[in-house]
Image 1 (cartoon, rainbow, N blue to C red):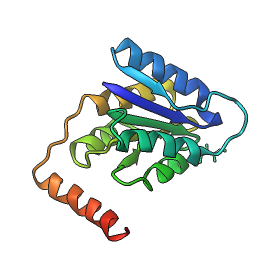
Image 2 (cartoon, rainbow, N blue to C red):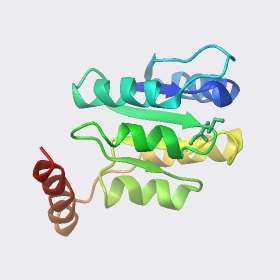
Image 3 (cartoon, rainbow, N blue to C red):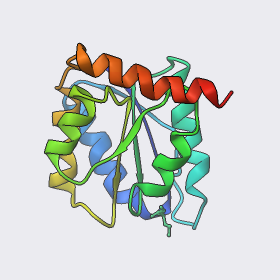
Length: 148
Ligand code: RB5
């Protein structure tokens, strides 16, 4: 799978750990930055990854800021994006199985590397269940259409 990853200054170390993990698992990773420790604005990187996912340049996205909140909020403004902030594997699993999320977000100040890797693995290995969940995801996306 081709995975886009983006982060702010708070998540440089965790991003590197996750990128190594993804590559070990055989995934292709596209790094949208930041790669500087200088304080930066997380919406920039949230939008870059979200647009890459929405355009089909990458299959899925991973976003990391201090909490996962700001960067996912930015990503969710891009049409077609469903970004979920998770801090444990059960929610990460459901984010795919029921919500068909195309971006997983988490906080470098919230989760450690091992927990983050468990979430990433669970999320990537879980299929969307469709059925009644497709109807609900469609209803979410209809809200987006009403905003155009
Ligand atoms: C940066 O200090 C911090 O606000 C950011 O990483 C993130 O947690 C915002 O939601």
